[in-house]
Image 1 (cartoon, rainbow, N blue to C red):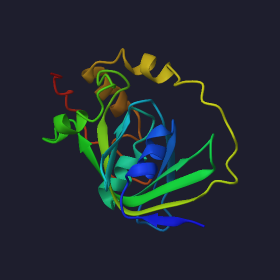
Image 2: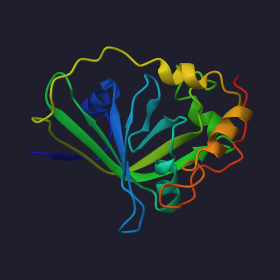
Image 3: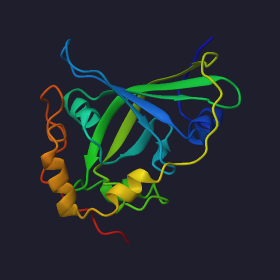
Image 4: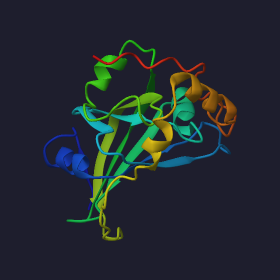
Length: 197
């Protein structure tokens, strides 16, 4: 039987922070728009900001569906499931916002990700989510799987990009500045990464 929670703290927070993988789900308002589901990993790229707020780093990829959907309507669901230990699934339903490199909040938010080098992976936004419903459920149907480590390919691919070449990469890809359904995606030109202290 599932349970609702008022805040992300205690055992619930410990469970979320221990997972190596989570999923994000978003959709446009249009009834025939493309629903998007994305896996997120990379150690150190997720943070619990407070009992109702979480954030994760949004890295370069072939689309920007999550950003586009959040810019349009803000709806997002995050899901974690246990691949080892007791069978558990946790979902956070809420409102999300992409915070871009030129936002005044950028530096303060980046303090929550001390183990991430912002010059790697084509970091393009920080997704901040305010929880509206926090719920767990059984994970009886989730298989046991072992975590072996993060793949190095994403970092090795995008670490060699400068801000200028990353902007050019995004401009060449038809679904970065505009979503699959034609919604505004990542704003371009890509602002440079703020200098790190």
